Image 1: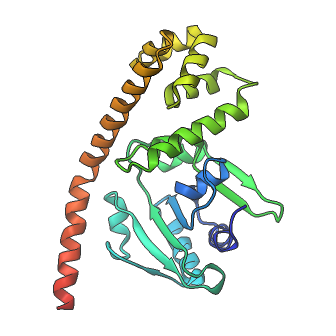
Image 2 (image 1 turned 90 degrees about the vertical axis):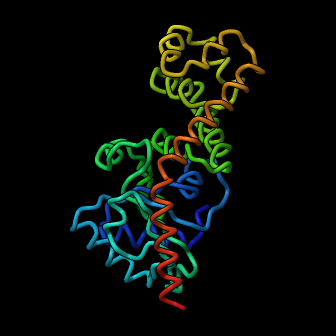
Length: 252
């Protein structure tokens, strides 16, 4: 169940007609891959009208920008996240992180077309990053994100394995991080697996049913993606460090 403070944040965004997609831990909760998260991470479209609607939602949530960078939309254009803390009594303490660009993911309009829409019993509509895009967004340098990817794909597999259409099979083969699942799906769908192996060479080990080899190749894949994430964030981190240093000088 989604905690009421999170419902307040998301329903406020919806009431102000903000075009947003929920990602991060809360999206994983909806997909059945996490039990609890107190933060909200969203990606929004960065046109003027939507930013104005988002500003109105922040005002209602009594949200203040925290940390760096400051509340300047230009930082979103450069790939940074802006961080807000809500003070509204119904959402007190909730942190809201917003981005407009995600490393390795398509632009917002493409993400929007692939979104997952959920409506709860009270009629509140939640717009989520599609599961394939959420998995891609989780491929970071943070160790905690990789078990979440595994749980996301595993949850999707166990939910849909009795109805394995081609799109689902390709998703499992491209993204599963569970050797047993890769071996099983490849064995049951050899033609598709032979096609996908050109995109994900480690699948060759699935045909040999080698858990040890697959586990080693999965770790190599994780390390390569983490390094790509570090390279992406390196100039942005330097910019944040410069902003922090300037802020400290102002406060001295």
